[in-house]
Image (tube, rainbow, N blue to C red; front, side, top):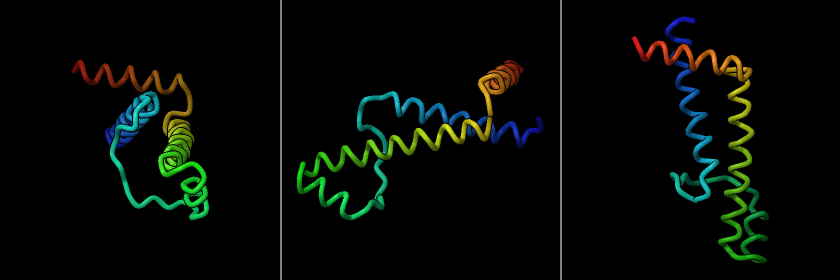
Length: 98
């Protein structure tokens, strides 16, 4: 594996680790990014029937579900298997010792 490929995999590993920690946390901590595009009726109906806090929670759950799916695809594209991930982590450990 050349240095460029190693750096890409390392960056993706850091992103996946950060996503994993975010999804495990049971808080609303993190950065807020606006605007988020959602169907207008979705927000309107949730806000009208259940209040704005409910609409916010629903959007957050949708975001987390999408983030989970996206990170799983990234994992498959970059590492493909648990064995490949473990091999890369071992390589990373060796490079850190050098």
